[in-house]
Image (tube, rainbow, N blue to C red; front, side, top):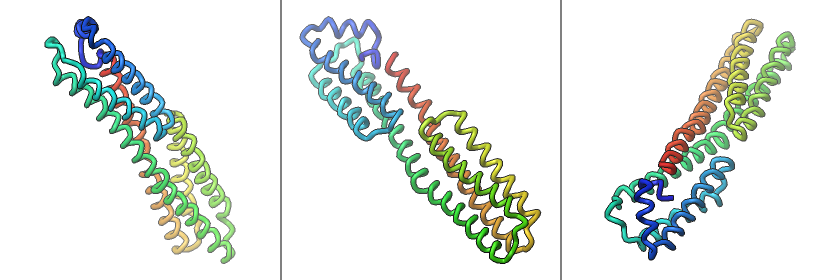
Length: 230
């Protein structure tokens, strides 16, 4: 664990202090537990695992109070690196909470508005006897459905391939919304589709925000790993 904040020589110095070996072992064990909690948290983002990380770090800081810091090691640097590691974890938690809000509120609300807009459009102009563009409407609804399901897959896998599938679906949606405008019979119908296109752009913007919240975590995780092995 002490590789987090000191050299190998410094670690050996601590270990030679036999009266502090037990406390050092506790610190190493709790840091190991915190490291495991980090790995588990970035997979399933479970609150219990998050609490385990903070509990382990609390025990580390309590144990540090029992150690007489050796003169060859800077107590300030020691604490700075511990604080930095914990702050990185706090940032990951913050980004995950931001992602959850974006998908559970912003994205879901907008995608539902998009579906409702298409349903309203379809109902209105079907009643008026305009069926010539029904195939375009079907294509648009199909793409919106794929975006909805693909997003759920992406937030489980967080893979680049799944993200690219969604981006491709958004391209298709934009293309379909542009194409249908050429066959619409009235200015009113075109205006409604333009409004739906605006909604589609809002959904796309929210998706990009969610991607940023996910992908911003990776550099932080790498920094934490670097701190752990130094």
